[in-house]
Amino acid sequence: MGLLTSAGIAAYVAAPARGEGWQDIAWPFPRDGWPPGRAYRCAATSCGADMELYVRPKIGFCNCDSGVADDDEIDRVADLDLISPSFRPLHKGDVVQIANMPGRARSYDLADGTLRHAVGMAVSRKCDLMVAVVQGHAGAPELQHRAMEHLASKQSADWIRWAMTGE
Image (cartoon, rainbow, N blue to C red):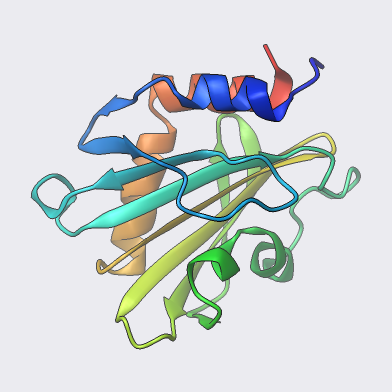
């Protein structure tokens, strides 16, 4: 696996992504222990409701044996706390696959008075984690559908593969 640096990821992040209504936006969160990822916005005219999607790798942050094994792990790792300090799961999560990596997705109510929902997703490859969270005023099933569609696009899948492997 190639060594990923913050500068390397930032350089790759700078490439604009266009298509299916999703537009690149600047990473909106303060620096933390992980490099910034990719952030996208889809306007209501394209996606039915305004929504934002945030995706980033967390290299070396996954259980090497079990991957993303349960909903509690999604609650811990999916960066929901960056969006709102108050989030409440709506129901049990589902098994998902993003860029040929297995994991789980779980829907949430952002209990901060904004009437937004979110879907946290976490998938793994070996000991590495890729997390994504989509939030907006649409229902959780629509948010997840739109985000999964975008993450399955060639451009997103290529970036995810690069971010996870350096190749």
